[in-house]
Amino acid sequence: MKVAAGEFKAKCLKLMDNVHENQREIIITKFGKPIAKLTPVEKEEVKPLFGILKDSLFITGDIVKSTGEKWNADD
Image (cartoon, rainbow, N blue to C red; front, side, top):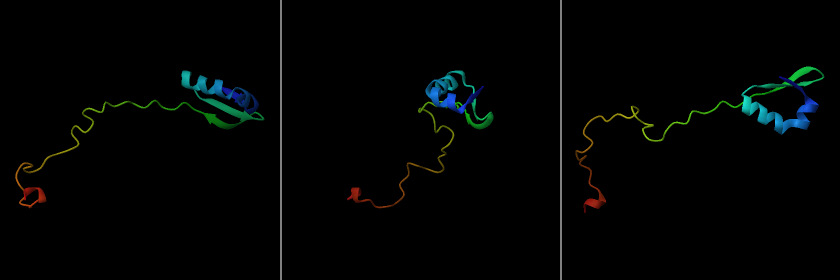
């Protein structure tokens, strides 16, 4: 869809809603020549928080065994 700059200025919010709802871009023209493009934002995939780190962390060695370090809490 092509829209003249003057029309875009007058109907900006309505055209933005149109782009969002229809997921189709609008070319803005000035004196019949394209000068800008209004494109819809790609929808982000919502990932669940639970399990997001699955398969990204690996335990190597014994995580329960003492390191031998003396902590202040041990006093």
